[in-house]
Length: 335
Image (cartoon, rainbow, N blue to C red; front, side, top):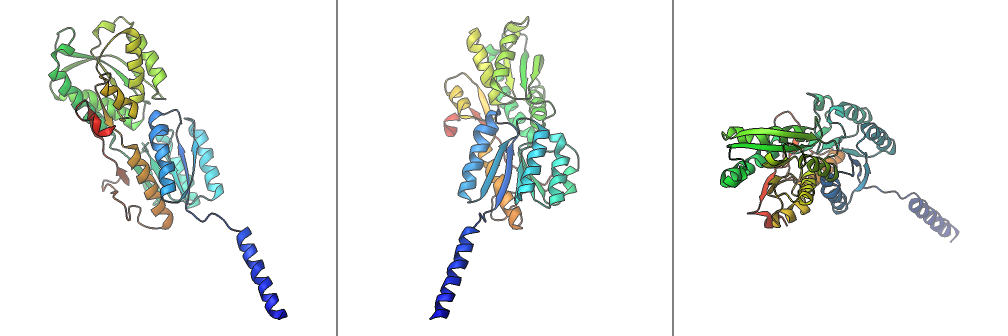
């Protein structure tokens, strides 16, 4: 009897120790958003990362890097010290990818870069456990350009001075950002490829891509010496396009404006006739692909195992989520 009691006590003690020492055994992902001030990253990508992490039953720690690469470097060090299983990093500075990759490599932690692609040639090859999830940067500009060309040719009254030349202003994103550079180049190139003469009246770049700054910029353009020559406003993203719309409303001006991202507010503006088009930057699937790759990497599987994602066989180690045009003819499909 005494032995039975002793064994029972030992068993109870073991269970107590097990309960006291119970820990979260789920895959632990350390992630960031380069700035919560970005309409698209904070309004679309971050919520889907959090929702999908719950669906996949993983632990996700996500932080705001406040558009500061130094802060991001420190956050990565903290994630590594905490012993995360995998890193999902939205670079602040695409040119600074090497430092993040080297940190992950030294700690032997898989790394998924997302939305901002490393700009240094060959840097993805220094570590066999780093991959990228994003888009084909040029594709958004190509699609946006094709929409604008079609509408320009269909609306003769857009040529306000009748000179056959498109006079435009352009709201550009962060200088050096692959998306900003490619969207700017390809959007305008679509006109010249179609044999349409263009004249750039003004271009303003923005590190924040945000509405308020774009509002101030366009408001200044609409009171400038070239104000009455502006025939089109091109924006690298929806957030800045919203600022343009606000400025036009204040000035009682109506000009065609195009963005990129297909945010809910952009769809509403298209429905109301205040915006002419946008391009779906599929943040939902970017978030899902990021976590799918992260989970597979943490488990030691092929990063695309059991998923619809495909790694491009072009040396970039990248999953590219496609863009989709959104116009007055199909915006209801995206509401």
